[in-house]
Length: 294
Image (tube, rainbow, N blue to C red; front, side, top):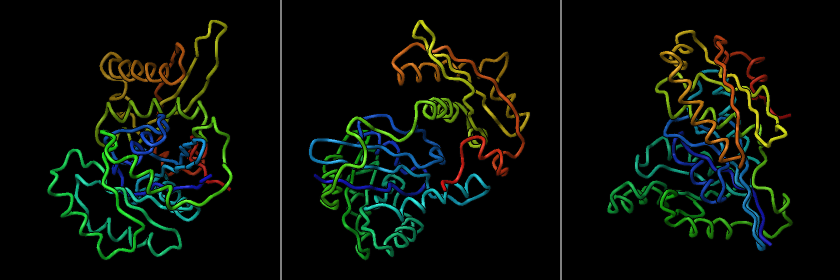
């Protein structure tokens, strides 16, 4: 049986989370068109009778601007040192940048094989694909696979390439486990995903979601109570919106996402609070779940 761990790394918004969700066949991580959507290492576990692949979704490589960004970058660097394979994801539609190649070279210097997934090929001209792939010629890679996660194009080919690079071994997780994250974690992330999709610019990046209560009523309905924490009073006003319209919209979409995830009705209560500069406050970072592993 094949078994191994794969760190999925790359620049912010390269399509890492979408690719993992497609490979695993479950929604393991939230997705949005905005950078910094993924903040923590999240395991997505694909198990069959003949193999188990443990994918580590990591925060996008991004210049640190605060303690939260520092935490995110350390998560990525640590993941890439502790796995059997590094899957480097590059946004093909955006084109291969010099910074992509420089980062790729840094990962190549380790003793772990590096495989490249060249993503979003469905939204770029076909003739551009070979022109871009030539840029990898001088790199010592285990392979390069052009893929489209949204279309499912070459996803099986990518998985086959990953399995070729993994060794025989016992499964790390039970066969029915698809992620290391709890339902409580995913409920928080679903709210944050809807905020990312609703709001522009800095607001969603300055938001944390705190789960105060998650319980199941005798009727089977899930009761969920969350705080949306932002950094400024004017951000709070924008999140709430005129007569509460914006918050109501986010809450409705979040409740629908939770119901789909849990497979049951959800009664959701949401409050908005302000904690100035929480992204640079070590205590609050820990309180909101962004805590370094020992």
